[in-house]
Image (cartoon, rainbow, N blue to C red; front, top):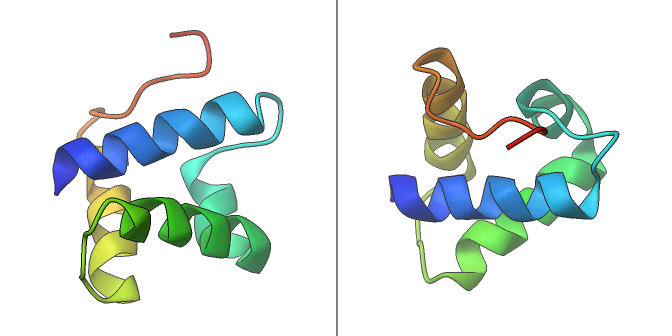
Length: 69
């Protein structure tokens, strides 16, 4: 699931280059819905909690790309 989460996060960074972060995705219902739709479009059938918790853990482990990448 991690590759899908990372790829979806990259899409979010490209779509919202100046206004995207894990915190924004977790806090903003619109960004969260957009991110979850991207993840689920890749056939990941997990709960919202599992997806967002995994995204948060990826950030804590410094596994996510940065805007400058």
